[in-house]
Image (cartoon, rainbow, N blue to C red):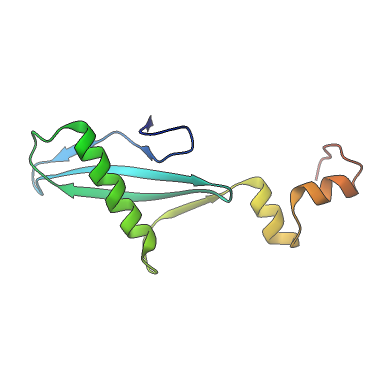
Length: 105
């Protein structure tokens, strides 16, 4: 995957151009403390648009999808957020109660 901004910024998969729809297409992944969220994005534009403009448009499309309540996307929760979701406590709190070390589940 191609990093389009700083390390924590969105990632674009291989950007392709679909001549049937005259649009650029890619999968855009956003990272946050809970894990990552991925959306399929498209941008209707001419083939001669610069890569930078196409990438920015694809990221805008994915962000617009993320704001929709019924957006179709894929979520991958980080291990820490999964522990918190299941127990209601942060992973650090659980580790400290176990003696501070890493223990097998």
